[in-house]
Image 1 (cartoon, rainbow, N blue to C red):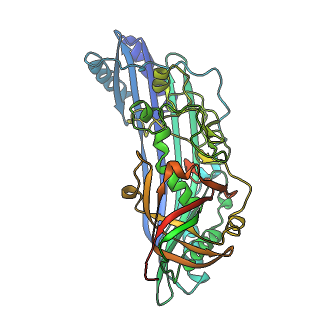
Image 2 (cartoon, rainbow, N blue to C red):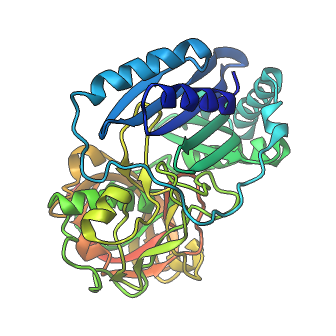
Amino acid sequence: MDILEFQNELFRAGKESGFTEMEIYYSSNKSLSVNVHKQEIDEYNIAETGGVSFRGLFNGQMGYSYAEKIDLDSISLILEEALSNAKVLEIEEGEDLYEGSEEYPPNRPFSEELEQVEADKLIEAAFEMEQTAYDLDDRVQLVQYCYLTKNISEIFIANSKGLHCHEKTAYVSGGLYLVANDGQSTATGGESDYTLTEFSKLNFKKIARKAVDEAVSKLGADSIETGKYPIIFRDSTATELIGSFLGLLTAENVQKGYSKFAGKLGEQVAGENFTLIDDPLMQDVPGYITFDSEGFATKCKAIIKNGQLMTFMHNRKTAKKDGIESTGNAMKSGYRGTISVGPYNLYLQPGNRSLDEMISTIDKGILIVELQGANAGINTVAGDFSLAAIGFLIEYGKVVRPVDQITVSGNFFDLIHNIEEVGNDLRILGSVTSPSIKVKPLLVSGNKNV
């Protein structure tokens, strides 16, 4: 049954049952994924998930219900369940229906081409990517996994107060993870990419080349002497580090007293070269969306600008508590999820220097390309971190050899004040991204006997 037909019939029946206000949140996700191993199909999965949540006002009380099936038989069950719990639940502060924003940006065009991509095309591409990795370098010992995934997602939010938001997106992603061995040491490397428009935009040989280069470049790694070194966190590790502290910028955590940024709006909380932007309207990135999970129009905004804390990320409930307007950052994990707060496309504004140019400015330092143990090694309250790392030793402006068996330690709140340069290598792959950053010396613990 078409979701619009379902909504109209549900609201008609709900009105007859005595509901004065009603809202539905519909989400669906269809995915086709293949994983190949040694030129054979290792995994082949087709998955379809989704459903609808309903909330309605009955005699001044809000009732809630859910259904997976979008058909006429579900309507009576949805209304009965919502009616039942409306009689026992109390409306929480901020739990009202939103009539919608005055205007919304245009939706991104949906790629029908990607929707029509067949399984055999994904399998063929995965085989090509895997074989390319083996052909590129004899030291590639094993491609542990090599995958292609097609994903179609849809969100629809509508209510009886006039809200009507709909978004449908398609993407195809691919990647691989491999092990290299030179007879004396072993190292790993991986790479992935995606397209939101045309399948031909995925360069599978380039993906394989990056994964191979990453792995073989780490072969022969050894530790270093303990000391303080200037550090470059390459884009992926800078992203991981910044992403670990992202919760401190959500109004939910601030209002609960879980954030060190509480009470610091308008203050300088980072260096002047630190500008953190959330832009859900940036074209050609996965996080593009014109409305948040409450139907509030999204917008581009600086969370931190030139080091100054400009705003926290808000949904309608947290914004109401602070007496301001939502920032359009309401998040919902699915139709059964609860409303929280989070970014759609948050990134550290890039600078002008390339990674190679930043490396050339260091006499002796470390380029960190992999961090390990973030779950246990980061204290988000105090900001302290101590993480196992893999990277490369830099001497006289050049990378001279790979290093491992090291631990890098510091404090996040100090670090964002001590960024010397921000790279220009921003590459958006998810909801949080950072280019490479060069920071003042941090303590690196290595093998003292080196």
